[in-house]
Length: 152
Image 1: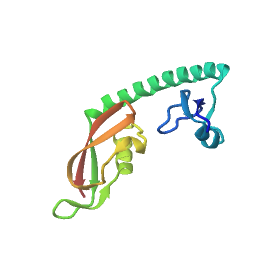
Image 2 (image 1 turned 45 degrees about the vertical axis):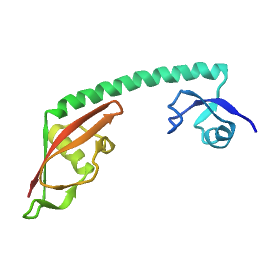
Image 3 (image 1 turned 90 degrees about the horizontal axis):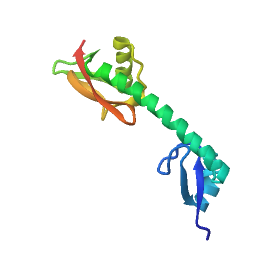
């Protein structure tokens, strides 16, 4: 039975590491999964230098993305996004307000394009009134978005 091997990740792998990381994994996992799927390559001296360059690029790109996400957060925290939906007498919506509806409402009212995956709804909004929705445009940036749902 062979032991662990050092590999350089060519892409982010959940539970293992991010692109450019040098990690130790079992030989079988590397041989049967990571290398054939081109997710990793064997760690050699030259490849480790290349991995360092990948990590440096990732750090720069990550800093720029975080900066952009923080700007979006400062612009949206103060805003109240209005969404109208058909509702019954008791304030219960006939349908629901989904993350996709919120993304299009934010784009229409503020001009900010959010990815749908950034809007974290535990479950779709089904009542009229004011709701707080968590928005995470970047792994390190999360802010509450105030959504006002009115009946139409």
